[in-house]
Length: 121
Image (cartoon, rainbow, N blue to C red; front, side, top):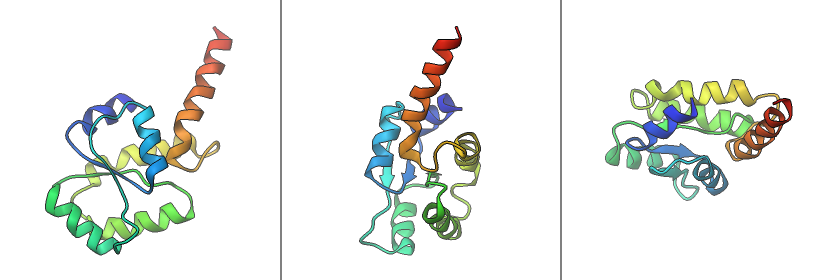
């Protein structure tokens, strides 16, 4: 799944909540455009600006209360432009739900899991 996200990000920007989320995705190997939500603009303005530059986007917002709220709003504004990539966030949310509830925690979680895998070998 991570390999597929890396490949998609070569051509499609990923939208995250903040700088730490973007940094976490860089640590995971994403090399394409990563866009953080602009706190100075409303979500409608942010979405309009985003759609002027990009036809498709990947939404990777946290799955905590704030992230779910923002995700709901962005779904309305970006309808028709993100759905084909929605499984990335949904799968991450399902896989990480018991351990973390945000994008920035994924690299540390993967590192811990690699440690467990190494112990069992």
